[in-house]
Length: 98
Length: 98
Image (cartoon, rainbow over all chains, first blue to last red; front, side, top):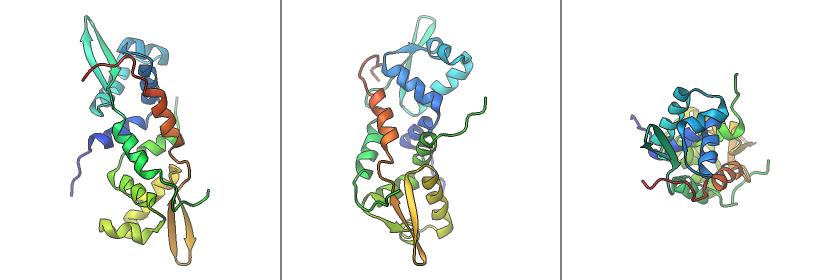
């Protein structure tokens, strides 16, 4: 049976990269253009665009064209799915001490 | 520069699969052997062992040999990293309405 990735699958896969997590943290402080996001990483625009595209496909980031730049921001409630998952798996029963 | 996956990278990558998320939900209700986890998925023991190994490498699940079975349980505080990340990215500023 072929299973296609859901939005939740894509969200967790997108979060598995440290650069993309850092981008989300930066966007938590406010919107930014792709150039502004690329600069502190010393990353090319092309490289950052690829990261942003994966974050868009995961519905974590939204972008809009503003003049000649593309402005990025966090999607409201983007983390609803992962927090629901956490709430359902964070009961303390049945755990092994590590 | 080569970057090796951190535990947080591995945790999010492990969570990107619906079977592994379902296993974590099941373990949220209490510990289980690999056979018990495989059965409701109609999955082979070998297949479930691979999922459990990835969850162990991500420090989300711990296992211990009990008699002839291997018992699995959630790792206490396994979701600390992802919840910290969520807290740091969930400020409402700078978002685009979608």
